[in-house]
Length: 136
Image (cartoon, rainbow, N blue to C red; front, side):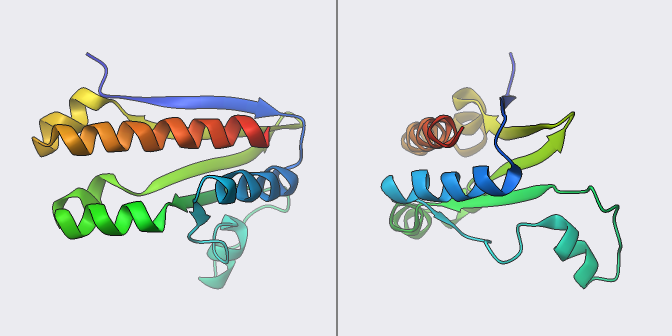
């Protein structure tokens, strides 16, 4: 059984344009970009004294639906380890690549013993995939 998968998409849009469109698509669905000021990894690494190549444009976009996340974590803080959802965006061969690690429902339920949380997380992954498709 496969416990997780990497959802992959590609677009001709620039990384910056995709991020802008992703933010808009998320807002429509009640999601925010939690780490907007630190998602551009070249700047994050630079802030720690690590320089990367000029063409390095990887963004790690952490999306969150605050209302849903707050209720879920108040119900059971053990869920927090599975909740961060990062959309990875970078340029490869003149195309913007989009990646999302998706934990499969059986894994979530096996780790947490919580079918309701597994259902909720599956809904969130569906919403995020729809946001990605809208931003492409």
